[in-house]
Image (cartoon, rainbow, N blue to C red; front, side, top):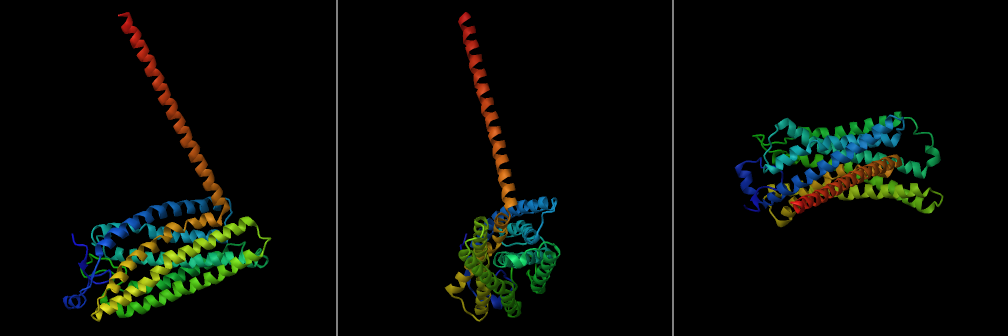
Length: 360
């Protein structure tokens, strides 16, 4: 099997012969077909388990009327993650089949759209969570009593979803499959590249760069306030610092590399259309595939926010783990006792058999 195939630096081979001959740029497609299925399988399992437990915890809290602004935002974040996680088995199948899409053009569009919907919904709700935490720490007296009703967080959540849908909906206008419908591209074909690049750049600015700058500003001020104020509850300080670290990791590992190499990959495709094929373009393609996998990991890491923002969730998880440990311990004791009883029975039978033999 060849390690490299002569294809363009994109997720598509939907171009005519003349175009193919002008951009003979070999890239490592085998890497993509091995790396992404493994990542997507891990993310689907962790994301389904983590977000399922997180939403269950929120549902259990809603039965006791213990919801607050943070609970509403976390619930929306969990729903966005689950919508994306349920599409991953289709992508795992697609890449394991060597890039052959078996589920139709409509399902391809929906699968790719839900990835970007989850991506920018995650960024939007992480921004809202960060602003909420910022206001609660920096202006606690002003915020006291203002976020007790759930009307405001539901309204903000609706605005976030509306804004994300507005950002993602133009992507439906770009082709996601080839003429046969057997390939499902995460971007679009070369024929639409001239309009797709400005769209992606605009979404990068509005959906990632601006929220990222807002979060950096909020958390820098939060760290300064926590550092200077010695009267802050140590537990709140510890949880806030952990939240700052987790959100920064999410943005630095999952979101930042993806947006950088997504735009660079589109730029390198433009270079190819002009007849350029360099090792830099090949490296950009492989790096872009890696960042696609990293971007999907936000659905597996987001559930950690439940632990960072809710003591009740931590307590419930600790109780569940203790019960599971007790159950396993009890099961192990019963198994050990059963083996001990069987051993004693075997010894008694052997002794009786030996006595019977001696009498004979």
